[in-house]
Amino acid sequence: MKTISIDIPESAVFPVSASDEEFARGLRLAAAIFWYDKGLISQGKGAEIAGLTRVEFIDALGQANVSAIQTSVEEIKAEKERTINARR
Image (cartoon, rainbow, N blue to C red):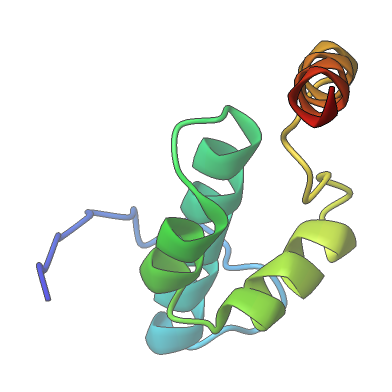
C-alpha cells in the first residue's frame, strides 16, 4: 500500500474527537466519494481506497447523498434501444 503524508496544522480541529487513524480513514473515504461522484473511479476502486467492502462503500455513498448509479438517462435509453435491436 502506498503511504502519503499530509501536514495538518496543530490548530486544525478534527471533526468530533477523531484519533489520527480515524481522521485518516475519514479523509480516504471523503476522497474516494469525491472521485467516485466525479466519475473518476469505480465503486470497486472507491471501496479499495476507502478500505471498505464494495457494499460498505455503496452504503457510505448513500450516507453522503451521492448516487451509487453513474449511468445517465441517455445511456440507459441507448442500452435499451441496443437490446431491442439485438432481439430483432
